[in-house]
Image (tube, rainbow, N blue to C red; front, side, top):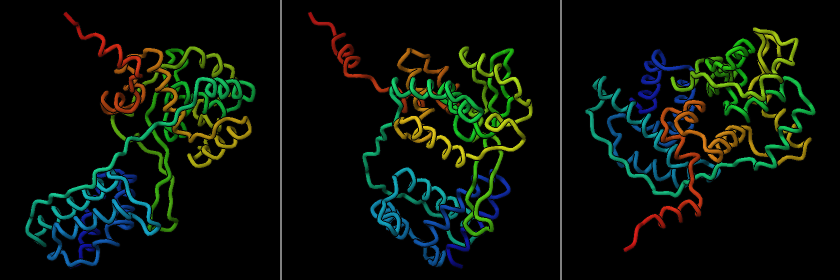
Length: 308
């Protein structure tokens, strides 16, 4: 039995217990990375050396175009391999063995792209002078930190204007199915984790803007005010055209979320509150992403040491 057969059997069994989007993600990794590198090996012949060599290949070359994969991506690939091997051992295809894989150390500190205060003001000014349902969606993101899928799934009934609360309960995404026809499909599902199901306070400045949309339909999607959603890739195109039209730096849509979080930190927001607003699973995730002390703040620390 080939390893690719075991991978397919494992994934088929796993399908009943995971979200469809997770299944599509696992399937993509298996078809794109694992099977080309290890799929034709007989399962009994799989060794740690085979997998270690594949890891080095993924981290140094990665793809046919020569772009290496990030360490975190390769770690996710290895996680799937480990689960498939445990499945093979449970089915008595192989004897279970401990897999100890070394990863190439890489400096992967990612500098978040954030709109400056001037750019942020320019975005808000441009929206208020060209206000419609789609531009309001952009305004909502830069004032609440919504993810693009959460915005696309949001309906007017999810915004309680009396209590000034936004209820986040769904996300909309297009998943990729490599061997299916069609190869992509839209999913409207629960958010990525339990922390993402949350309530976000509605900004005082946004409330009168919402109330000014007199014809908003309670069961309509915010971006269209109809029962027809706008999918993320369509919104991204609109957003990039909006930035170009208004001569604003072309940062990707997720930077609206980064900008919201960064401004909150700069203005002394409580970290725990911000973490819950963003839907992070832990406060450490928020701290690691957005809290970066300035040199002045570091100087204050070292100067606190008392001298005789």
